[in-house]
Length: 227
Image 1 (cartoon, one colour):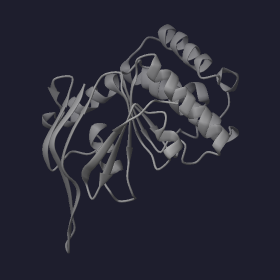
Image 2: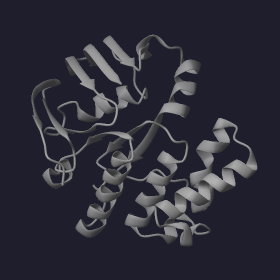
Image 3: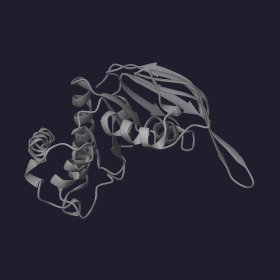
Image 4: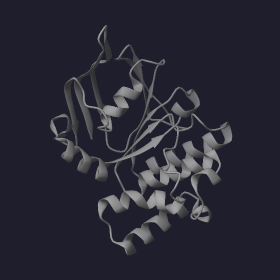
């Protein structure tokens, strides 16, 4: 599904060049749950941002289901993201002025789905995430765990094959964190590929494979029996 070849990312300022990623070669198969770990500043979020096409690599290749993503134009990347990738962030990134329902509906609006189809799909995914009873609430009226459920609902409402999760439990207590990881694990069992950046060994325990980064390079990986 995903393949990177000699993927590198260099950030340049007036005084210094920083190599955030250094010739990363990575393959992720469809249906895998992969955790990326490493110390702060090792390149985890940079790699996730490139996989999500939020950043472009300085050099190297990024291939998704046979398509060379790093050669796409900005308009092509926008279209590519809509149908293929869902994002789950540590800070939830919900729109405060929109209700739970409207936040989850938004990706379908961008895709041009018809109103009747949107209503049916949003209702289904809110029920699936056990947050339907909060459909009319605003994000600030929800707990952190509920907000992350809404964020996951928004990520999966388009039936995208890949979810990228950046520290998805970082702002949650342990109970809500476990609930969120159980949700992601269930989505993976249903066929969604998940790539997650985390500092948490507990969260990484849900993955099939753990990749360790250091100084922008993959230094090791281990296979895991998921929780």
